[in-house]
Image (cartoon, rainbow, N blue to C red; front, side):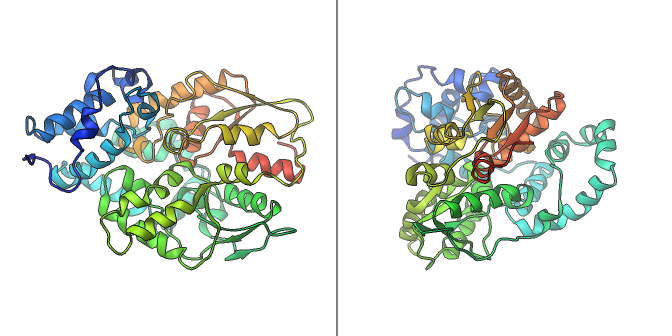
Length: 436
Protein backbone atom coordinates (compact mmCIF):
# COMPACT_ATOMS: atom_id res chain seq x y z
CA UNK A 1 0.00 0.00 0.00
CA UNK A 2 1.34 3.44 -0.96
CA UNK A 3 1.94 5.76 1.96
CA UNK A 4 -0.30 8.88 1.87
CA UNK A 5 2.76 10.94 2.87
CA UNK A 6 5.60 9.48 0.78
CA UNK A 7 5.55 9.24 -3.02
CA UNK A 8 6.41 6.27 -5.22
CA UNK A 9 9.90 7.47 -6.22
CA UNK A 10 12.11 5.10 -4.26
CA UNK A 11 10.66 5.38 -0.75
CA UNK A 12 12.62 3.56 2.00
CA UNK A 13 12.44 -0.13 1.13
CA UNK A 14 10.47 -2.24 3.63
CA UNK A 15 12.92 -5.14 3.31
CA UNK A 16 15.78 -2.85 4.33
CA UNK A 17 13.72 -1.49 7.22
CA UNK A 18 12.81 -5.02 8.37
CA UNK A 19 16.51 -5.92 8.61
CA UNK A 20 16.71 -3.77 11.76
CA UNK A 21 16.24 -5.91 14.89
CA UNK A 22 16.28 -2.85 17.17
CA UNK A 23 19.31 -4.11 19.11
CA UNK A 24 20.64 -0.62 19.85
CA UNK A 25 24.27 -1.23 18.85
CA UNK A 26 24.04 1.88 16.67
CA UNK A 27 23.25 4.21 19.56
CA UNK A 28 26.75 4.61 20.97
CA UNK A 29 28.26 5.33 17.55
CA UNK A 30 25.60 7.80 16.39
CA UNK A 31 26.83 11.38 16.83
CA UNK A 32 23.38 12.98 16.88
CA UNK A 33 22.20 10.53 19.55
CA UNK A 34 25.36 11.16 21.57
CA UNK A 35 24.62 14.91 21.61
CA UNK A 36 20.81 15.01 21.67
CA UNK A 37 20.15 11.83 23.64
CA UNK A 38 16.71 11.15 22.14
CA UNK A 39 15.67 7.84 20.60
CA UNK A 40 14.21 9.37 17.45
CA UNK A 41 17.51 11.12 16.79
CA UNK A 42 19.24 7.75 16.47
CA UNK A 43 19.40 5.39 13.46
CA UNK A 44 17.08 2.94 15.21
CA UNK A 45 14.57 5.69 15.91
CA UNK A 46 14.67 6.95 12.36
CA UNK A 47 14.10 3.43 11.04
CA UNK A 48 10.97 3.30 13.24
CA UNK A 49 9.83 6.59 11.69
CA UNK A 50 10.47 5.36 8.14
CA UNK A 51 8.41 2.25 8.82
CA UNK A 52 5.56 4.29 10.28
CA UNK A 53 5.65 6.67 7.30
CA UNK A 54 5.59 3.77 4.86
CA UNK A 55 2.58 2.31 6.66
CA UNK A 56 0.76 5.63 6.77
CA UNK A 57 0.69 5.62 10.57
CA UNK A 58 2.26 9.08 10.87
CA UNK A 59 2.58 12.17 8.68
CA UNK A 60 5.67 14.02 7.54
CA UNK A 61 5.26 16.73 10.16
CA UNK A 62 7.92 19.30 11.10
CA UNK A 63 8.67 17.28 14.25
CA UNK A 64 9.22 14.10 12.25
CA UNK A 65 11.36 15.93 9.68
CA UNK A 66 13.53 17.40 12.44
CA UNK A 67 14.64 13.91 13.46
CA UNK A 68 15.84 13.18 9.93
CA UNK A 69 17.46 16.60 9.68
CA UNK A 70 19.46 15.86 12.83
CA UNK A 71 21.16 12.92 11.06
CA UNK A 72 24.69 13.78 9.92
CA UNK A 73 24.73 11.00 7.35
CA UNK A 74 28.09 9.91 8.76
CA UNK A 75 27.20 6.22 8.24
CA UNK A 76 28.91 5.08 11.45
CA UNK A 77 25.84 2.99 12.18
CA UNK A 78 26.33 0.97 8.98
CA UNK A 79 29.81 -0.01 10.15
CA UNK A 80 28.59 -0.93 13.63
CA UNK A 81 25.31 -2.73 12.86
CA UNK A 82 25.61 -6.49 13.48
CA UNK A 83 22.53 -7.14 11.33
CA UNK A 84 23.91 -5.37 8.30
CA UNK A 85 21.15 -2.77 8.10
CA UNK A 86 21.82 -0.59 5.05
CA UNK A 87 21.00 2.66 6.78
CA UNK A 88 22.99 4.54 4.14
CA UNK A 89 20.45 3.50 1.50
CA UNK A 90 17.53 4.18 3.82
CA UNK A 91 18.54 7.76 4.67
CA UNK A 92 19.53 8.40 1.02
CA UNK A 93 16.00 7.45 -0.07
CA UNK A 94 14.31 9.33 2.78
CA UNK A 95 15.85 12.75 2.27
CA UNK A 96 14.54 13.33 -1.28
CA UNK A 97 11.10 12.28 -0.02
CA UNK A 98 11.27 15.05 2.58
CA UNK A 99 12.31 17.68 0.03
CA UNK A 100 9.49 16.68 -2.34
CA UNK A 101 6.71 16.13 0.18
CA UNK A 102 7.36 18.51 3.07
CA UNK A 103 7.14 22.28 2.84
CA UNK A 104 9.70 23.91 5.09
CA UNK A 105 9.18 27.36 6.67
CA UNK A 106 9.98 30.28 4.34
CA UNK A 107 13.18 31.39 6.10
CA UNK A 108 14.52 27.83 6.13
CA UNK A 109 13.65 27.37 2.45
CA UNK A 110 15.46 30.57 1.51
CA UNK A 111 18.52 29.64 3.56
CA UNK A 112 18.71 26.21 1.95
CA UNK A 113 18.22 27.69 -1.52
CA UNK A 114 21.10 30.06 -0.79
CA UNK A 115 23.38 27.18 0.26
CA UNK A 116 22.52 24.88 -2.65
CA UNK A 117 22.48 27.70 -5.16
CA UNK A 118 25.97 28.78 -4.14
CA UNK A 119 28.28 26.14 -2.71
CA UNK A 120 28.06 23.55 -5.54
CA UNK A 121 29.05 26.25 -8.05
CA UNK A 122 32.69 27.37 -7.61
CA UNK A 123 32.42 30.35 -9.93
CA UNK A 124 29.39 31.71 -8.08
CA UNK A 125 31.09 31.16 -4.75
CA UNK A 126 34.18 33.00 -5.95
CA UNK A 127 32.07 36.11 -6.53
CA UNK A 128 30.85 36.03 -2.93
CA UNK A 129 34.38 35.49 -1.69
CA UNK A 130 35.61 38.77 -3.21
CA UNK A 131 33.94 40.96 -0.53
CA UNK A 132 34.81 38.36 2.10
CA UNK A 133 38.47 38.56 1.05
CA UNK A 134 38.33 42.32 1.62
CA UNK A 135 36.45 41.71 4.89
CA UNK A 136 39.36 39.58 6.11
CA UNK A 137 42.18 41.77 4.86
CA UNK A 138 40.72 44.88 6.52
CA UNK A 139 40.61 43.04 9.86
CA UNK A 140 36.82 43.14 10.03
CA UNK A 141 36.50 39.38 10.49
CA UNK A 142 38.40 39.43 13.77
CA UNK A 143 36.37 42.37 15.02
CA UNK A 144 33.02 40.84 14.04
CA UNK A 145 33.89 37.53 15.69
CA UNK A 146 34.89 39.28 18.91
CA UNK A 147 31.53 41.07 19.11
CA UNK A 148 29.49 37.90 18.50
CA UNK A 149 26.98 39.97 16.54
CA UNK A 150 26.46 37.39 13.78
CA UNK A 151 25.53 34.75 16.36
CA UNK A 152 22.92 37.11 17.78
CA UNK A 153 21.46 37.88 14.36
CA UNK A 154 21.44 34.29 13.07
CA UNK A 155 23.09 31.12 14.47
CA UNK A 156 22.96 29.66 10.96
CA UNK A 157 24.86 32.55 9.39
CA UNK A 158 27.27 32.46 12.32
CA UNK A 159 27.87 28.78 11.60
CA UNK A 160 28.68 29.67 8.00
CA UNK A 161 30.93 32.63 8.85
CA UNK A 162 32.82 30.79 11.57
CA UNK A 163 33.99 28.17 9.07
CA UNK A 164 35.42 30.72 6.65
CA UNK A 165 39.15 29.99 6.33
CA UNK A 166 41.91 32.45 5.51
CA UNK A 167 41.44 33.42 1.87
CA UNK A 168 44.32 33.95 -0.57
CA UNK A 169 44.68 35.02 -4.18
CA UNK A 170 44.81 31.35 -5.24
CA UNK A 171 41.14 31.16 -4.21
CA UNK A 172 40.19 33.17 -7.28
CA UNK A 173 41.88 31.21 -10.04
CA UNK A 174 42.39 27.66 -11.29
CA UNK A 175 46.07 27.27 -12.11
CA UNK A 176 46.44 23.63 -13.14
CA UNK A 177 46.91 22.93 -16.87
CA UNK A 178 44.66 20.50 -18.72
CA UNK A 179 47.40 17.90 -19.17
CA UNK A 180 50.27 17.33 -16.74
CA UNK A 181 52.94 14.82 -17.81
CA UNK A 182 54.33 12.13 -15.57
CA UNK A 183 57.84 12.53 -14.24
CA UNK A 184 60.02 9.71 -15.52
CA UNK A 185 58.37 6.61 -16.92
CA UNK A 186 54.59 6.91 -17.25
CA UNK A 187 52.78 4.17 -15.36
CA UNK A 188 49.19 5.44 -15.45
CA UNK A 189 46.98 8.08 -17.03
CA UNK A 190 44.53 9.48 -14.50
CA UNK A 191 41.86 12.13 -14.39
CA UNK A 192 41.69 14.55 -11.47
CA UNK A 193 38.62 16.16 -9.93
CA UNK A 194 39.39 19.52 -8.34
CA UNK A 195 36.44 19.69 -5.96
CA UNK A 196 34.51 22.82 -4.97
CA UNK A 197 35.69 23.62 -1.44
CA UNK A 198 39.04 21.99 -2.19
CA UNK A 199 39.89 24.15 -5.19
CA UNK A 200 38.75 27.40 -3.54
CA UNK A 201 40.06 27.02 0.00
CA UNK A 202 42.71 24.30 -0.29
CA UNK A 203 44.38 24.74 -3.66
CA UNK A 204 47.62 23.71 -1.96
CA UNK A 205 46.14 20.20 -1.51
CA UNK A 206 45.39 19.94 -5.23
CA UNK A 207 48.90 21.16 -6.05
CA UNK A 208 50.38 18.57 -3.68
CA UNK A 209 48.19 15.86 -5.21
CA UNK A 210 49.53 16.67 -8.66
CA UNK A 211 53.15 16.55 -7.50
CA UNK A 212 52.73 13.23 -5.68
CA UNK A 213 50.92 11.60 -8.60
CA UNK A 214 53.33 12.83 -11.29
CA UNK A 215 56.42 11.83 -9.32
CA UNK A 216 54.91 8.37 -9.04
CA UNK A 217 54.52 7.95 -12.78
CA UNK A 218 51.05 9.35 -13.43
CA UNK A 219 50.05 11.54 -16.34
CA UNK A 220 47.15 13.71 -15.17
CA UNK A 221 44.17 14.97 -17.16
CA UNK A 222 42.40 17.97 -15.59
CA UNK A 223 39.31 18.83 -17.67
CA UNK A 224 39.13 22.63 -17.71
CA UNK A 225 35.37 22.83 -17.21
CA UNK A 226 34.33 20.70 -14.26
CA UNK A 227 31.73 21.50 -11.66
CA UNK A 228 30.54 20.00 -8.41
CA UNK A 229 30.53 16.24 -7.86
CA UNK A 230 26.97 16.56 -6.42
CA UNK A 231 27.92 15.52 -2.88
CA UNK A 232 26.44 18.55 -1.08
CA UNK A 233 22.97 18.43 -2.69
CA UNK A 234 22.92 14.62 -2.77
CA UNK A 235 23.54 14.29 0.96
CA UNK A 236 20.67 16.69 1.68
CA UNK A 237 18.05 15.22 -0.63
CA UNK A 238 18.32 17.76 -3.46
CA UNK A 239 17.91 14.91 -5.91
CA UNK A 240 17.32 16.66 -9.24
CA UNK A 241 20.18 19.09 -8.69
CA UNK A 242 22.45 16.20 -7.73
CA UNK A 243 21.50 14.25 -10.85
CA UNK A 244 22.18 17.24 -13.10
CA UNK A 245 25.61 17.79 -11.55
CA UNK A 246 26.43 14.08 -11.80
CA UNK A 247 25.57 14.00 -15.51
CA UNK A 248 27.77 17.05 -16.09
CA UNK A 249 30.68 15.41 -14.27
CA UNK A 250 30.32 12.23 -16.31
CA UNK A 251 30.29 14.24 -19.54
CA UNK A 252 33.35 16.19 -18.39
CA UNK A 253 35.45 13.03 -18.25
CA UNK A 254 33.97 11.34 -21.32
CA UNK A 255 36.60 10.30 -23.87
CA UNK A 256 39.54 11.13 -21.61
CA UNK A 257 40.69 7.48 -21.70
CA UNK A 258 41.96 7.50 -18.13
CA UNK A 259 42.80 4.49 -16.01
CA UNK A 260 41.32 6.05 -12.89
CA UNK A 261 39.54 9.22 -11.79
CA UNK A 262 41.24 10.64 -8.71
CA UNK A 263 39.57 12.60 -5.91
CA UNK A 264 41.29 13.88 -2.77
CA UNK A 265 38.15 14.85 -0.80
CA UNK A 266 36.44 12.06 1.15
CA UNK A 267 32.86 13.32 0.91
CA UNK A 268 33.15 13.88 -2.83
CA UNK A 269 34.62 10.43 -3.37
CA UNK A 270 31.73 8.71 -1.63
CA UNK A 271 29.15 10.42 -3.85
CA UNK A 272 31.18 9.87 -7.02
CA UNK A 273 31.21 6.15 -6.27
CA UNK A 274 27.40 6.23 -5.85
CA UNK A 275 26.64 7.64 -9.29
CA UNK A 276 25.29 4.26 -10.41
CA UNK A 277 22.55 4.41 -7.78
CA UNK A 278 21.93 8.13 -8.20
CA UNK A 279 21.30 7.78 -11.94
CA UNK A 280 19.80 4.29 -11.96
CA UNK A 281 16.52 5.51 -13.48
CA UNK A 282 18.17 7.53 -16.26
CA UNK A 283 18.13 5.42 -19.47
CA UNK A 284 20.86 7.52 -21.08
CA UNK A 285 23.23 7.77 -18.11
CA UNK A 286 22.60 4.64 -16.00
CA UNK A 287 25.40 2.58 -17.57
CA UNK A 288 27.66 5.61 -18.03
CA UNK A 289 27.29 6.28 -14.29
CA UNK A 290 28.23 2.71 -13.39
CA UNK A 291 31.29 2.83 -15.65
CA UNK A 292 32.34 6.24 -14.30
CA UNK A 293 31.95 5.20 -10.65
CA UNK A 294 34.05 2.08 -11.26
CA UNK A 295 37.02 4.30 -12.13
CA UNK A 296 36.77 6.62 -9.13
CA UNK A 297 39.58 6.25 -6.59
CA UNK A 298 40.43 8.24 -3.51
CA UNK A 299 44.00 9.44 -3.99
CA UNK A 300 45.21 7.53 -0.92
CA UNK A 301 43.43 4.37 -2.04
CA UNK A 302 45.02 4.71 -5.47
CA UNK A 303 48.54 5.34 -4.19
CA UNK A 304 48.33 2.39 -1.80
CA UNK A 305 47.29 0.20 -4.73
CA UNK A 306 49.99 1.28 -7.19
CA UNK A 307 52.73 1.58 -4.52
CA UNK A 308 54.98 4.58 -4.15
CA UNK A 309 58.04 4.53 -6.38
CA UNK A 310 59.70 7.68 -5.05
CA UNK A 311 62.01 7.88 -2.07
CA UNK A 312 60.53 9.44 1.07
CA UNK A 313 62.62 11.70 3.31
CA UNK A 314 62.04 12.81 6.92
CA UNK A 315 59.89 15.93 7.28
CA UNK A 316 61.23 16.68 10.74
CA UNK A 317 64.68 16.44 12.33
CA UNK A 318 63.12 14.94 15.46
CA UNK A 319 60.58 12.09 15.71
CA UNK A 320 57.21 13.43 14.55
CA UNK A 321 53.95 12.37 16.14
CA UNK A 322 50.93 12.40 13.80
CA UNK A 323 47.26 11.66 14.42
CA UNK A 324 45.13 10.64 11.46
CA UNK A 325 41.55 11.93 11.46
CA UNK A 326 39.14 9.46 9.83
CA UNK A 327 36.69 11.30 7.57
CA UNK A 328 33.32 9.57 7.89
CA UNK A 329 32.67 9.19 4.18
CA UNK A 330 36.12 7.67 3.75
CA UNK A 331 35.95 5.33 6.75
CA UNK A 332 32.26 4.34 6.80
CA UNK A 333 31.23 5.23 3.26
CA UNK A 334 34.21 3.97 1.23
CA UNK A 335 35.68 1.58 3.83
CA UNK A 336 39.09 3.23 3.45
CA UNK A 337 41.00 3.25 6.71
CA UNK A 338 44.18 1.19 6.41
CA UNK A 339 45.58 2.79 3.24
CA UNK A 340 46.10 6.35 4.58
CA UNK A 341 47.82 4.97 7.66
CA UNK A 342 50.04 2.72 5.55
CA UNK A 343 51.16 5.70 3.47
CA UNK A 344 51.84 7.97 6.43
CA UNK A 345 53.85 5.29 8.22
CA UNK A 346 56.23 5.15 5.24
CA UNK A 347 57.45 8.67 6.03
CA UNK A 348 60.69 8.31 8.05
CA UNK A 349 60.64 9.37 11.72
CA UNK A 350 56.84 9.44 11.84
CA UNK A 351 54.87 7.88 14.67
CA UNK A 352 51.14 7.50 14.08
CA UNK A 353 48.80 7.68 17.06
CA UNK A 354 45.06 7.05 17.39
CA UNK A 355 42.54 9.35 19.13
CA UNK A 356 39.72 8.38 21.45
CA UNK A 357 36.43 7.93 19.57
CA UNK A 358 38.28 7.98 16.24
CA UNK A 359 35.16 6.93 14.31
CA UNK A 360 32.91 9.67 15.75
CA UNK A 361 31.96 12.42 13.29
CA UNK A 362 33.55 15.86 13.70
CA UNK A 363 30.23 17.57 12.95
CA UNK A 364 31.07 18.99 9.52
CA UNK A 365 29.10 16.46 7.44
CA UNK A 366 28.94 18.50 4.24
CA UNK A 367 26.76 21.49 5.11
CA UNK A 368 25.48 20.05 8.39
CA UNK A 369 27.50 22.56 10.43
CA UNK A 370 25.62 25.32 8.61
CA UNK A 371 22.19 23.69 8.97
CA UNK A 372 22.55 22.30 12.52
CA UNK A 373 25.25 24.52 14.06
CA UNK A 374 24.62 23.72 17.74
CA UNK A 375 24.98 19.96 17.36
CA UNK A 376 27.90 20.43 14.97
CA UNK A 377 29.72 22.68 17.43
CA UNK A 378 29.40 20.15 20.24
CA UNK A 379 30.78 17.39 18.03
CA UNK A 380 33.59 19.61 16.73
CA UNK A 381 34.60 20.52 20.26
CA UNK A 382 34.69 16.85 21.31
CA UNK A 383 36.65 15.84 18.22
CA UNK A 384 39.35 18.48 18.76
CA UNK A 385 39.75 17.57 22.43
CA UNK A 386 40.28 13.93 21.49
CA UNK A 387 42.75 14.77 18.72
CA UNK A 388 44.78 17.19 20.82
CA UNK A 389 44.88 14.80 23.77
CA UNK A 390 46.96 12.39 21.68
CA UNK A 391 49.85 14.85 21.97
CA UNK A 392 50.32 14.81 18.19
CA UNK A 393 52.12 17.70 16.53
CA UNK A 394 50.13 17.39 13.31
CA UNK A 395 46.60 16.28 12.49
CA UNK A 396 46.21 14.58 9.10
CA UNK A 397 42.75 15.18 7.62
CA UNK A 398 41.66 13.94 4.20
CA UNK A 399 38.45 15.95 3.77
CA UNK A 400 38.15 19.73 3.37
CA UNK A 401 34.95 19.95 5.42
CA UNK A 402 36.55 18.11 8.32
CA UNK A 403 39.63 20.32 8.03
CA UNK A 404 37.56 23.52 8.22
CA UNK A 405 35.58 22.21 11.18
CA UNK A 406 38.62 21.00 13.10
CA UNK A 407 40.62 24.16 12.35
CA UNK A 408 37.74 26.25 13.69
CA UNK A 409 37.61 24.37 16.98
CA UNK A 410 41.38 24.26 17.32
CA UNK A 411 41.30 28.06 17.21
CA UNK A 412 38.36 28.29 19.61
CA UNK A 413 40.21 26.10 22.12
CA UNK A 414 43.46 28.01 21.66
CA UNK A 415 45.52 25.20 20.15
CA UNK A 416 48.32 25.69 17.61
CA UNK A 417 48.28 22.11 16.28
CA UNK A 418 48.80 22.01 12.52
CA UNK A 419 46.26 20.28 10.29
CA UNK A 420 47.34 19.01 6.85
CA UNK A 421 46.01 16.63 4.22
CA UNK A 422 47.95 13.32 4.18
CA UNK A 423 48.85 14.03 0.55
CA UNK A 424 50.54 17.26 1.69
CA UNK A 425 52.68 15.30 4.12
CA UNK A 426 53.67 12.84 1.38
CA UNK A 427 54.48 15.76 -0.92
CA UNK A 428 56.76 17.33 1.68
CA UNK A 429 58.47 13.99 2.22
CA UNK A 430 59.01 13.41 -1.49
CA UNK A 431 60.49 16.90 -1.88
CA UNK A 432 62.57 16.61 1.31
CA UNK A 433 60.97 19.66 2.91
CA UNK A 434 60.69 20.00 6.70
CA UNK A 435 57.34 20.76 8.31
CA UNK A 436 57.63 24.36 9.43
